[in-house]
Image (tube, rainbow, N blue to C red; front, side):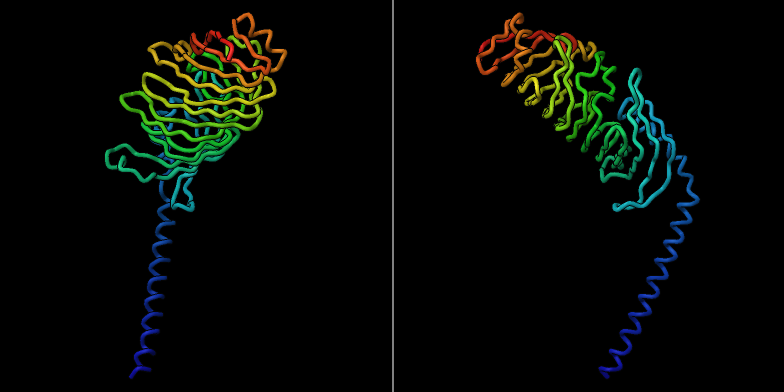
Length: 291
């Protein structure tokens, strides 16, 4: 009796396995048929609208197709360019997006997980009309839409980091942390020359009425310094926002010291100084005292 039972059980198991494989094959063929017949181009306008709403840019997409990634089905776009007036475009050769896990879908606020890469750098994270959160990698800072702030780009180079922003009542708020360990430069009005750096680290806390800089550090061949402070948001252009920064210079090239004396910035023998920066983003004013 035992042998007969054990002989029938494998037979049932094999029949069940064959039935399961057959159903899976049919479902797979049906899914492939639906994918091949689905008019993916109809998804392009709403997706372009989503990207435009989140970035404020005009969005161009060369190709759109369906694919399967490690996390499941996804849409893959090629030749994606984000254009802002008066700025060079941010260009991504490949963009993959899929629905992000979020209750926003139940409230008609879709959120997407987006992975993008190209000449302008890379992004991986969540994007929606009211949400931008994820990781930046080697983003070309000079290609960002600085013209929207009313002033030229204050930085040149590539930065990586994390961003976590939410838009509430029409205003963005959240935090960001960025760093760069490849050569770049800081180019601010009032500085005698662009300040090259080999390391740049900065943290930002963003609120509707204030952008705070809890910590920043710059290391380069001419200057090594730390900074902290804030910019107060007003109804004027970003370039006109009042600023209040405290900068501690740890080292400075001797050739630059002559520029600081007329500003009332006195340095000790080791090249240390404390500098107060006021004015606006487009017209900073520097004063200082001996450390």
